[in-house]
Length: 377
Image 1 (spheres, rainbow, N blue to C red):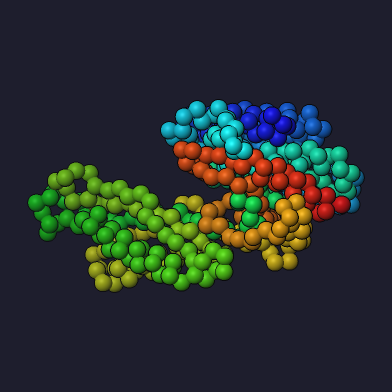
Image 2 (image 1 turned 90 degrees about the vertical axis):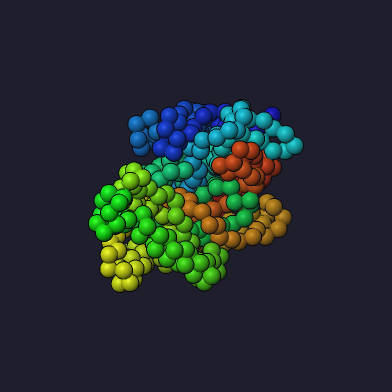
């Protein structure tokens, strides 16, 4: 087992299930302390920044001699619940693949970042290389929000598993609650009761039409259109009572140019149109959580660097793409740090079987180091 294989195995063997996703999850402290120790032994300047109690970020800096640009390498330490995966934290290497929870999402990419940062510390660069190994990416992205407020860089590479494609755009999301308001009454008195659950049917039908319109009208060359789905619904007290409340939780996936305000307004317009047809219809909408989409500026200086270094290592140009999911790149981009996503191949993010291709992780480590040598010189 070589250095990189051992590092990934050590990372995967540490249970770091995000406790905000899965109550009782172990959290990131143990894996953060392991990573910090490994990076300290490699000669980097290391800090443990506690974001929430027992849930730190690891910040490791390969200091340059001064005068060069700073590159950030970003990866997350939390994983999702194994959910039926047997021996989830016992990594297995078979046919060039490493299996285990978090191998693909994203301890393989994190290991590549750690190895590249360690080698950058002896590369005699002028600029700094900052590794941010962050907590909580799988839930609310608090780790990178915290890091972005404390550490600055001229560009960042997010090591999410992209299948060795260069990702320059991804969607964001808005979580909303819609509540319809009825009138509670005995089930035998339709003259007194207003059924809030029935009224929500109008909303669901309208949201279905909106989703079809969004998907049928792609407005972004890499991401297409936005999307929307109903996630959770609850209402009513008992069978013999008209329900006076029904609450629907929805997720609206957004593309660059869409804002939480514009998303909320399109929902309010839907509710207003329903009320105009049915004056007894009453409803309200509340915004819960918002994370922005991301698009790498076309003039970002990291773009030609990652294209050239990846082509040199792989022997061919990389595919440029967009992805439908959200990542911490949006947070760094909003903080003024131009970002790209580039990471290893594999499969099984959040699935029962998860694996990462080890050769692709080795290539990523080499590409990250070459990018740092070019960008930070």
